Length: 284
Ligand code: GUN
Image 1 (cartoon, rainbow, N blue to C red):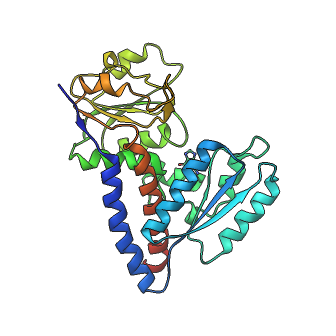
Image 2: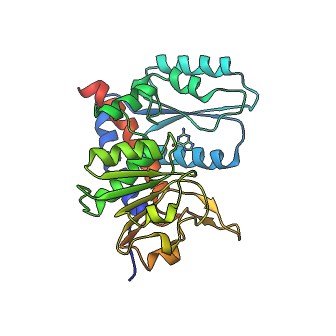
Image 3: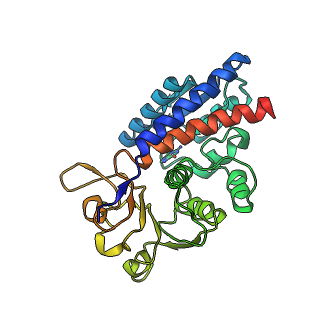
């Protein structure tokens, strides 16, 4: 068997085309959406992510307001910047790229962002809204995974979804989103005994741990849908996910590739949240 590909790159492009029209409608009403992107320090991966986010904004007609701060920026100075962005009418969304340097407490920073501008969906208010099924902002990566599943027409009701990884930005919110779609959800992690026995039960398997090619063919149920959130380097320095894509493709029913899978969707959902932020404020 060869798995069908879930092409995140094409899906993201189609979402972005539709967003560009919504942006134009907002511009016609007198407001161009603006996203403030804050990067502290020079983490190389973060620089790539931020560059991609800013480029995606400009392609969609969203203004990006870039704040690049030196690695020794104090927590106080960063909090002051966030307070200014919260009050700035031209800023609809605020994103502080993580990780921040060690001397800055990321929780303090996230909590300082106005929840109505928290387009990353990391603020405790938005996480709380997700827990109880209320409208808020959904974290972009797990939100993108849901859109990828939806694009295949797959019905999650009653299916067993297994999530590998329990991070605040993917594993935990992904659990809640899959639950909301009536899946039975299991979360496995680094302390789980017999990981393979658990992953083999999955109808839908989401891998979000950051370990190159952790998920091999022997860990996947034939016909399963496999979503690969990892972005790693393999032994040759090539980009790869948490899934051994080549081997797992022979077993799975559906698989998302790396690159070209979840990554572009994360950005598409960030732009979606930014446009939503404006629409909620102006149109509701
Ligand atoms: N670092 C890794 N993923 C993300 C993300 O989705 N948003 C932000 N702000 N930082 C990240």
